[in-house]
Length: 287
Image (cartoon, rainbow, N blue to C red; front, side, top):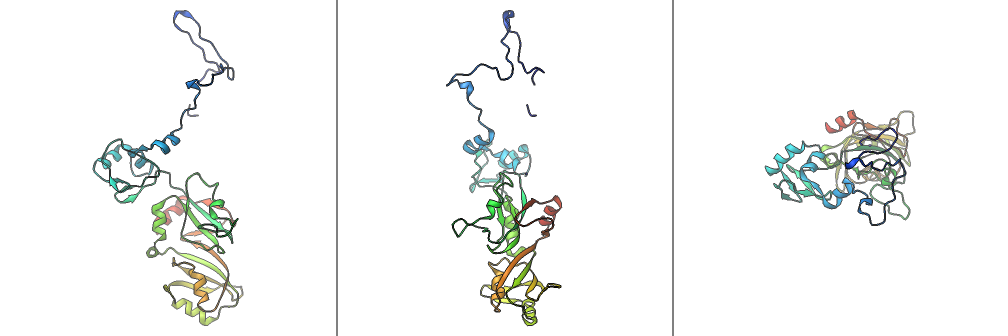
């Protein structure tokens, strides 16, 4: 997720000195410009100029939503801003979109922050294709925006369900920290029924090679076979669900993340994405 006045007949007319009338042209009948005529060159867009020559640092800061350009100048002169690790106090300093700009230690993004939620299908890679022709989530998100989006957190290739995308590096970093423990609920199908003893063991916490897996809740799914369970955890360990069950002799046949933070799959078909609502963003910011 009109700027530009002509006469009603589309003609431009006027008078020059000495009473001589200027030539008048209707739309589409302007004289043909010769090759090499400098006036025939297309104007360079602001965005392409910014990519090659850079943009003023105060504009970069203002675009990131921190403050106005005028206030940005004050912060720059006070030494609050660094570019690629170097404090910049020079007015009019230009930066490129590839530069790392920080304000009081916080990395800035000159693009408008965008947030999307994808209901990932099974067999789609998150971080890249390991097989020739394998599909990635970035292909599913290609038409969402022109901004560069990144997935927040991980989701195994064979897993399905909710995956958050954003160009807001600060929020992505916050949600990805293990200590923040974002709430995740999975619908899990096993190749065989889960015994009550192992259900209680999971509730108590299973110790794996990289530490104990804390589970907030786990239970059988009502009116379903006992090989289907729901599990809530805030763990960010790699392949944690599969490893947890494998340690007790079970194989995960189906894994579906149905809740991520306060986000759910409601009205979001498999393989589709949507923008987050303002309320959802507020909720995520409070996590």
